[in-house]
Image (cartoon, rainbow, N blue to C red):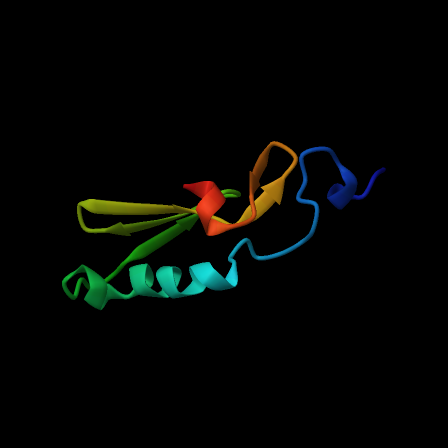
Length: 79
């Protein structure tokens, strides 16, 4: 059986999907104080996005990832 990392559609390299230029944004959106002091900010992660749910609002950012079908290695290329 092939290793999961070698199957088509898998990332070229294993990483967290969070580039150094994205960590500050992720920290900011995860902070309840950013959203008026809400008690909880829910963080949902997919292969290509990080979504923050704060009350009735949602904020989505694209991960800095490189897949065969999705190439967003830099914040600028995901825009």
